[in-house]
Length: 408
Image (tube, rainbow, N blue to C red; front, side, top):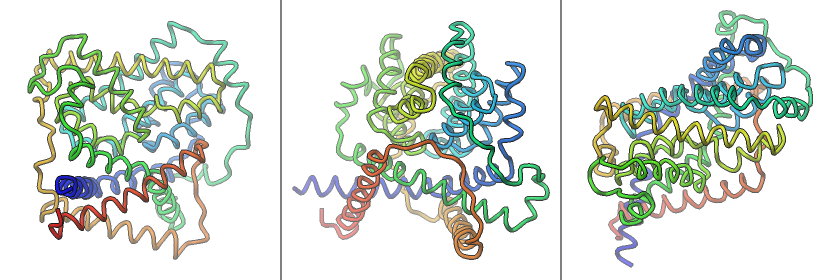
């Protein structure tokens, strides 16, 4: 019992520490994302992504880079762009860029994993797009693409101020109220995933023995990166399976990725784990609802194949350049989470900014409505995640009481 209480206190303290480390990064990322989504409309995207293939891929990548990192938002935007005339390959480029090349994800990775993983994330995102493009050109799924377009019913274009320049909108209080609304929506979309993901990371850090990871990921815990090709391939395949089982988006999975790397999982396995937010069952189901099951399974094959290839290329490319991070260098368990440093001051600053945005969007300008289209979520899954998140808060609160008052 004493051992359990000690581990419970450490798990809760670790989870709270992870939250504290990442709070300002989430806020900064979502402020930037919300501003872009208000000041940059989809009209220009729709008009420019249906032409020349190479130009469409380049524009899809750029528009994805300045978009939201939420998978459900990215899926809805991708569907909208594809429905309105964007080519299939440029739509896939947008989808991959909006979940792998976004600013906020890079900030979170910087905090938990280090610069090699930031480079890997952005370079890997580009590789995912290029490999997917190559596979589409080789397979030429014209019939699937035609049927997918038929499955999408044409809707009305969103009303609004698409013709207003961003220079004019940035001067208007109404636009900033929309930014505040979107900022609130960003948090509403991710709070359950982040809560569950960070709590799982704390539990794994305190309760799960290293032997488990040494069984799950072959040859981990050896303290080096001397993996054979087959061992790295196993890590790359198991990584997405582990991500699939957590059902948590990439933002919530980053602390767990850091823990896995600290346990000795290869660089390739960690990158595959991070890239896997689009090959989980909820995404498969949503794509099936949009485009039909055949196209959904094709997209799953496309993305899974691309992430395996990209992860392997990154690993061996970094190895050739002697840039692989040292094994266990991402260990974050020994950090002192709560101290007076830049994290403290950034968190205070962004809590003040958050408070102002809540006041502006939800009290001062309650008349302003702004909401981006979201992919249809499973009500059962969402309710399950909500209940799980509430349980997590009780778990964290109880564990902190045990830790603070020395009950363990």
